[in-house]
Image (cartoon, rainbow, N blue to C red; front, side):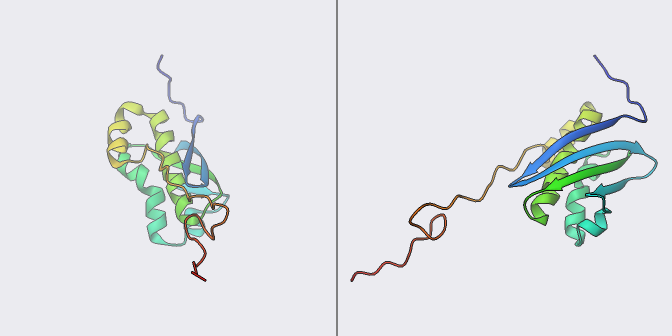
Length: 137
């Protein structure tokens, strides 16, 4: 069953990285624009690198359409949130047009959730693996 793409329809997906979660909605628009936690992309992610990471999925997919990207980010730090946003946009683009985007996004590694997490602290240790200084006497 093939869905028809309508102008008022949006495609929603969730992206994750470490403890960051991004709920992403993409809607077809006249020009590509972002709304991240009710702020512009440039206001939310100050550095050009983080803005490029967030915008990577749209550039790599090479979809002819322009999108309005609305995202709600929670948890983690700014770098993890940028990666979670990229993951969410990639998944939403897959729902928009799977046959055109899947190969490119998968090759770039944007569809795989990065499972690396901080290791938990163990009892008797100062951090996850760091033990207190040992003295013989």
